[in-house]
Length: 146
Ligand code: RB5
Image (tube, rainbow, N blue to C red):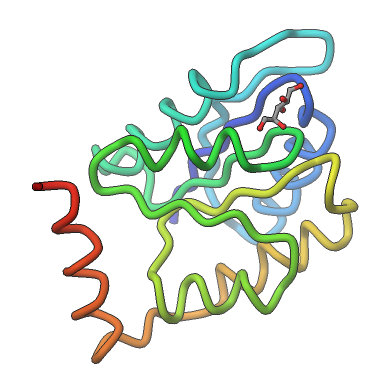
């Protein structure tokens, strides 16, 4: 399992905490984000994470900004991406089980470090349920072709 990480200047500290958490779980990380003191525009960081996922360089992506909103919208501009902003573990679990989200986003100014780790764990440990949800995902992804 390889996860692409991205963040703007609002989230380097949280990114580093999540990065270590993933490494502790035995997950390989590709870090496209910036470090403390560096400025970055979230669309640039979001696109890097999204392209790594659609190209197969990474299996999944986690992207962080101040709210998680700007970077998630940016990720979702890339064809094939289903990025979900989650501020709670329930949404994190369901966005995998029902929506098969391939990028998880959250805001460093919204969630605390421990909550962010729980959100990540719920998402990683959940499995896509398929069935009726696959039909809806097919409909959703077909919007990209219209
Ligand atoms: C940067 O200040 C902030 O706008 C950004 O991190 C994010 O919250 C945007 O959605």
